[in-house]
Amino acid sequence: MAVRPVLKMGHPVLRQVAAPVTDFGPALSELLLDMEETMREQRGAGIAAPQIGVSLRVVMFEMKENPRYPDIAPIPFTVLVNPVLTPIGVEQDSGWEGCLSVPGMRGLVPRYRQLHYSGFDRDGRPFEYAVSGFHARVVQHEVDHLDGILYPQRIRDLAHFGFEDALAGQMTPMPD
Image (cartoon, rainbow, N blue to C red):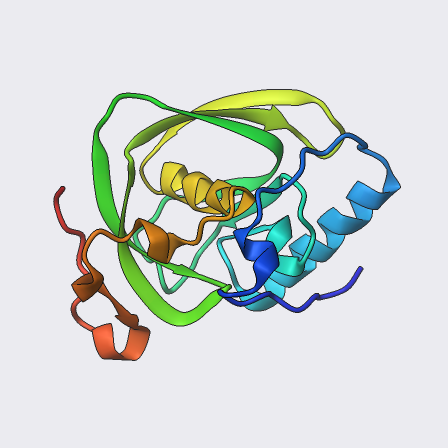
């Protein structure tokens, strides 16, 4: 188990489409431990395997108390392998996002309000959930990493993208 370096925007691994997981053995277990330790060390809401240099379709996320998101309902710790996302409806909300691979910056990103996701847990057991709000946003953000997409690519107006300290006081939700 080890904290791994988080790749930054511009690294070629972050632009790749990640490969599906085919082996739920010890190598995956080791990867998951490293991802969890790295996510917790960095105080992230989630992390994707490509962010630590492993181009596999694996994400994890969790939301407990977090000063960056004081009004957000908790999200249980979830490991999601080979995810499939299906929007529920067409409604989207814009919300401010950050990313461990884009440190110190925030951007206003549109995401589907409601989402169905399915995939496999750490042991290869299938599961599925229907979620909304911030939970849906986090899942979409993390799964984008598996398709080589970082949140700045989703920003519609670059006037709503910048360094956290420069945006202080400006980061309120905006209607779509």
